[in-house]
Length: 268
Image 1 (cartoon, rainbow, N blue to C red):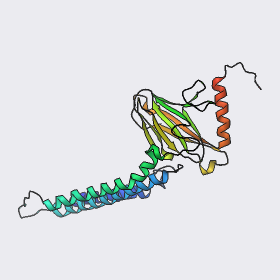
Image 2: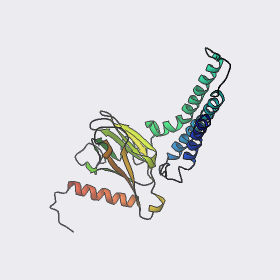
Image 3: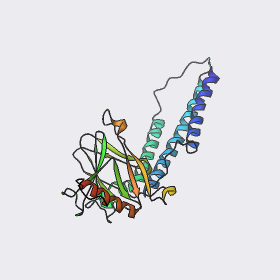
């Protein structure tokens, strides 16, 4: 029984490492990154994964070894101790240093993605976003500005369940909630941002088309709510559609015309 228990303990780190090594081949890993800052997010994830993985393997091997060494019957009496202050300081200091290392490693990426002063200021900016994305129980709705380019005026128009954006373009939009906390999450963009009631949160990204869909000029990426928001949370699905610029401009004109149509226009 002692040897079987030792074997089972050793199998834990072995299976854990195998799971991550084979994850990509088995389709258990992240989808392909298509955003401008996704590579930095992946770098930080891999950094933390290596740190945690090494710690996990080391502690599991030590646990198995201690179990094997001290589980056999012994004739001598146990020795009681109140602890080792030096050892406690070491195992407190090491995690503290690692946490500081992680904190400083991610500051630049966090500032690039989250600090409004670092947002792109091209065609779309925090002051003139491409639109507003409203989250509510349990759907997504995008409001785009009309010809005047200003949100909150009478020529705004809406589109349900989708955020449609041009490809290879820095896009800024405003994220809002109509009711409770929701969370905008697109795995391919490595982007997750909570939507808070009463707050308007600027978000930006630059997305590309999937390589196999470049000729078609359009790619659609799953948009999910990553915050438990009620009984219908599981079905709060939408998409972010990325389109070649000419297709995007045509889509905007068509969607705006359909929104303001009263159904009596002549059919061409």
